[in-house]
Length: 418
Ligand code: HEM
Image (cartoon, rainbow, N blue to C red; front, side, top):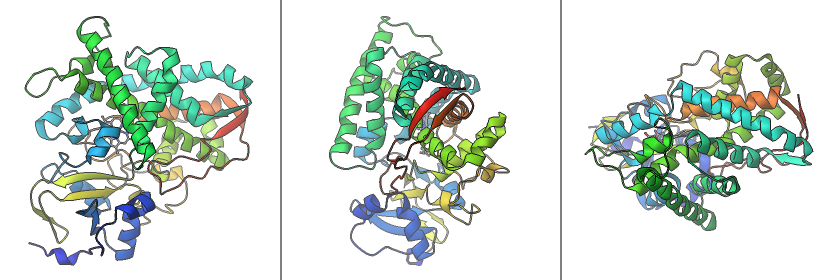
């Protein structure tokens, strides 16, 4: 067995405060300082192993070595994921649940959703032309919420869309927050779970008859591994696991708008309607800008890797943001350049904005195709269907807030249809 003295241990009783302060750079700062891809630290009073790099990522996705049960702190389950959701499942039960998610997100469904988003943007253009200024984050989050509910056959009144969109965003932004912002996320989750639970009950009692291929129907009839229907609450949690992240794509879209503004030459190239260029652009947005900082899992049974013995039950954090900005894996990582994706393999473990490995077998995000298609649709619309001015504003985003967003939410003025 390897000696655990061989990897650096960060001195000190606890580094939870540093994690909140250093945010996205917590793992990279220490990996750089210790000149290692693997080190021990302490977070929330417990030993935590942090790792970075594609080899570490490949190991992290070995389901013989890592499990997700008990990995996410309860406060994150109560805000971001929902208690008992797919994110904390393992083995056959996880596999079965994951197939249900993936069945909703094939290429046709991705394209249908992206088309619906383009139609909504079309409808929004005239009101935007009349407005003094338009805040992209705010407008896009509402559009995505409206479209996600329609796409999933979830009945929501127009007057409730804004509140629901804000609740989904609060759940996502509660992740790395303490105090009132965290509690706002938990309140938002309780409210939305109760709302979606009623809708699930309505499907089960026949009051609502959604299309059988819709997310609402599939979640309403979800069964566990013993063949029993999930409780309405658990079904609601999984339905939220489809709707919430679609609304969260508004964060990437806001960053994409900043990138278009800061790189006019790249924007010009996107006028050529070249789908490959569009895809490279959105992939670079997902690399360059911060969203998921790291992933967590627990060691399933003792094993050795890289001269280190991982002890059963240890919490392990896998770096995302730091690896996306590591010069060993990216040429000029701190420069925005879609050419990074010219010859890059889709399954490259140094690029894991939505997780790595096979989404059907492990925990990689099932919504990656949806994310890419929706981003492509909106970026294409911003470039080819409208013109706008970008007034002076604060685009800065802070790397010590997780998740983060350009401060202004990206303001535009003088919108004109092209
Ligand atoms: C906004 C862009 C998105 C980002 C940054 C993102 C990121 C992620 C990440 C990092 C994971 C965890 C991977 C892991 O644990 O190994 C994940 C899992 C997941 N994502 Fe996404 N995601 C996004 C969009 C979506 C969309 C659009 C959907 C659904 C429509 C979705 C549904 C899920 C689900 C259900 C899981 C849990 C999968 C599992 O545990 O097996 N996500 N996502």
